[in-house]
Length: 304
Image (cartoon, rainbow, N blue to C red; front, side, top):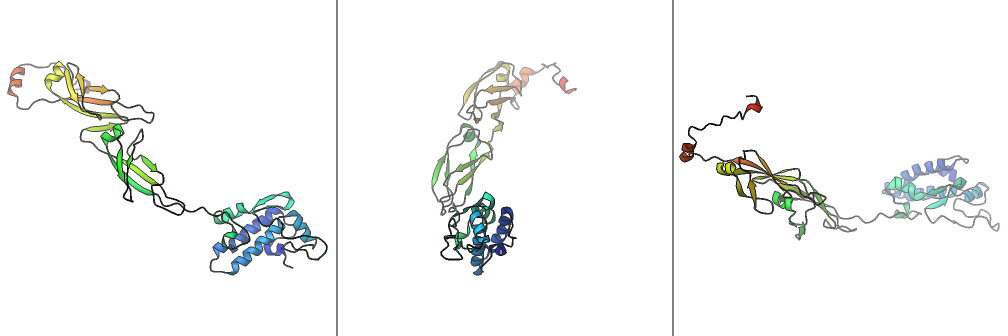
C-alpha cells in the first residue's frame, strides 16, 4: 500500500505545518504547468495531492494509521464499513490535522498565480484565470494654452480611426493623464483603456504661472501718463482694462477669474504687466520734452 508519509517525505508524527510545507515544495516541483514536457509529472502531482488530502483530514489520517483505509480512502478490508470512498476530496478545502482548516487554493495561488492543478487535468479544480483584457494604448494630445485655460473640448482620433470629443478636466496641467475606459485594444476579456497625456503648447504672448495667466501689455506714453481704458486679450476674448494715470512700466494689473480653472471649479486671475512703448524717431515728442529732466532718484533702491 502506498504510504502518504513516504510520498510527502514526512515522519508519521508530522504536524500540519510540516505537511503543508512539504506539499508546497513537491507541488511546485511536479505541477504540470512547470513540467509541460514531462507527461509523468501529472501522475506524480496527483499522487502528492492525494497524500496531502489524506494527511490533512484528521479522521482519514487516523483511519489510515490504523490500517483501515488506503491512500485513496478505500477500505482495506471489505464488510467492516470503514472509510467509504473519497469523501471531501472534490474541493479545495479540507479539515486539517488537529482541526486546522487548510485551503489548497491559497497554496496554489502562491505557486502558480491562483491556478490549481485541475487546469491541466489534475485531480482538483482550480481558480481559473479571468480572460485577459486588451492592451492599453498611449496617446499624446497637444492642447493650446488658451484651450487649456477655458477647458475647451478637444477632438482626438483613436487608433481604430474613430474620433471622440474629449472634455478637459478641471485643474488640467501639462502632463495630466486622462483614462478613456474601453478605448484601448480588444482582448478576450474586453478592451483595454486609452491613456491620454495632455501637452499644453506654449503661447506667443500668454504664459502660465500656477493658476494665473501672465501677459506683458504694451501701452503708449500718454496712456501711462494720463491713464485711460485699453483693450486687453484674455482666454475668453478681449476686454477693456482701466490704466491708472501715472502708471510706470512693470506695474501689474489684475483681471479676476481670467486664469486657469482649478480642481475645485474656481479660476485663477490674469496678471497684466504694463510696458511703456516709446516711439522711435518722434521729433515732436523730443521737441516737447527738450530741456525737461526728471530729477527723481529712480535707481536709489539699486544702490546706484
